[in-house]
Length: 358
Image (cartoon, rainbow, N blue to C red; front, side, top):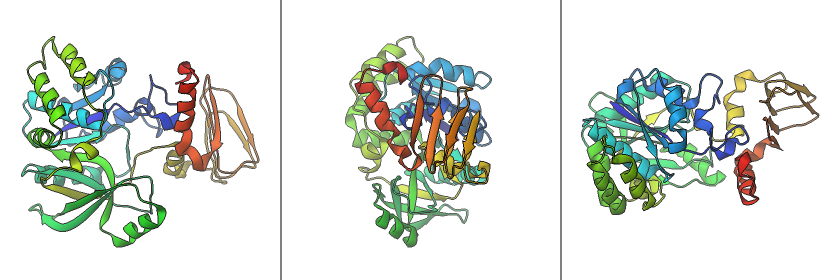
């Protein structure tokens, strides 16, 4: 199996730790290594490093090369952000250039997986199914009524030949309200959509040709330039004319081809906000359910996340469900339950011209 790791996100919900020059996927968020490095290491028992392709933003190319300098991984730099459909298309095209005609896993660089073996086994199953045609997605087995994720609805089963159950996909469902999410959990026929797809490069490019002819035309223009000095300029010219759209919207919601889902119960998290990171690291709570990083003095606080990333002592007194993140040039104080709204701060800073803080 080959892999295309998508590492082009901006990570705005992790401000002020995450910045445009150092977004979430390049941070040590979960306490072990930068998330991009963790993702590559997680895949390595199944995908040799030389069969991995990382697609990222041009301004992060040097950083990625430094982090992965001991691994023979292919790195492609997008000249500008255009969401996941162009990213996946470019990754499939490059995989073809490398001679790949087998299954490729397309996955984000900034997710957390607790059970690596369960995750890799799901990818193995998906790879076997994808070899026969169609697109296979991993469906995360839901553990709670979650309104922050899209869902995958399954229908009948499809045997992959080794007594593992794989389901046909009925629909990709938008983020639900809480009551609907509870119904999905009770129903048992719905999975969280983690944005992980497995297919051959030929299948991906054929689906893009059928569903997104503009993107397909742009990729065709790049085909003969890969591996030549003309590639960077050709890529920039093509990307300037591309629509910014996700693979889910551009292909998965339009395709008339076969789509399957492999259930995956692997302790997955998209680590999408400070509050999800707080929940993920519950084993590190103190006796009052506080998660404390760095130099911090926490008195009479409960259920809070306090992070001192500047070496200064942060003193917090008498708060509950509070988020405090102190960095060299910025301090965030917020309701932990509104951590998803940190992106509003980033947008406000952008509108006020404070680009140096982004």
